[in-house]
Image: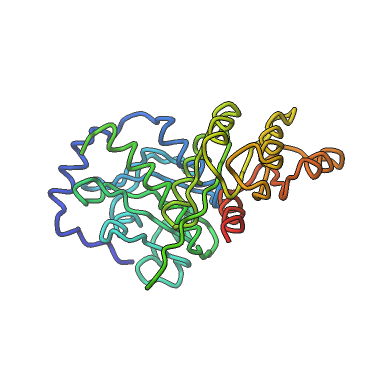
Length: 164
Length: 128
């Protein structure tokens, strides 16, 4: 397993994330609507709005997971922060970064992951909107366009609150 | 010299705001069509009076009140072409309702629950 390197602007990214004042706040329907919609649209058992903090990823909204956070070392979303493009893993077992990740080998048995970076107005990524499946999958251009729209809606909600 | 082909304009009547916004924003970002999205029959009536649409995507309630919109279009009472494509979104559709919709000039029936992707495919077909 390869732990994601820190983004070059990690200090600024964390400052911008913390300025949103959203970490460890209660669930909110405005975010849950988006993850529930994503799970339904893509028939995905798991959909998350994940915010990547210094040592953890914390879920502002989650469908299909009981935990509210995981270690950053294990987080797929920590890899997705490294680019403004979506991170698409059609089959985790065929990707050396993730093949022996405990979240792949054990619950929730991630085989497919796509994370769309939640880019703040500074261009820094707070986290991702992601969909996860327990079987390998592919997304076509229309799927990605829909997921991009849902990501944009999530970013709008994040910025409405924090204004960053 | 290249010619710019104007995007087709589609009227979407759908009460669910998440569906409306996701369809409209995705259609716009992909260059598929310009979507005028409205939540109610009344707003749709106003839009149809003022603007011309190449296609209509209409959510129907149980008593099919929205069919009056199609009647207006088909009879040339709106700026839209009388032959504009019309798809309807319905929760159920038995044989008698299907016949009623066909007689009203509906070209396609989409059953709930549907995927946004299905609506985008329909819009694509309307935009060709």
